[in-house]
Image 1 (spheres, helix red, strand yellow):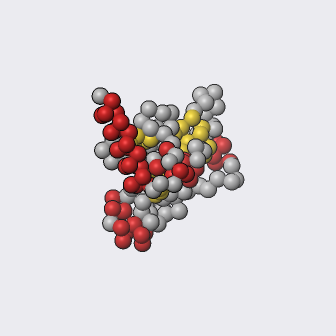
Image 2: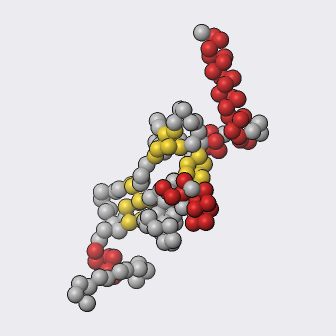
Image 3: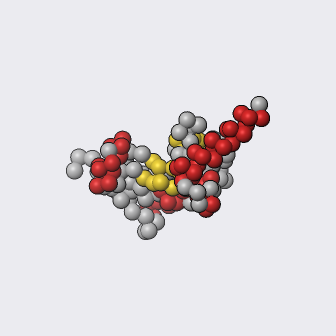
Length: 152
């Protein structure tokens, strides 16, 4: 039993060294455990290089058992394979200021300015404020609005 444990520890250390080198600063979980939001076409390295389809990598400190979830495969360790699809903090006494963030951005179109505009905030644990009061939204001068009028 002791030999199996020893062998497992040595194999684990060698796997980290093989992937990340022998530098001590690389032996931090948040540096070896990274998150990249893949795009289907981003699997083709040339397309990803030209269009910047994949978003990341970002350092990820979580696991599948932490509040800031960051599950990973034990067969292909370190790279994050699962996590929250969004984060939201709701104060039910004030629905006009809900904290909300998406892992990448509001748009799925790679050329949109909103394709990955929330990724850095998400990975820093920050949020954007969402408002629900229709009158507040209509009256607020700082908000950009799109009005669609049918039949015109």
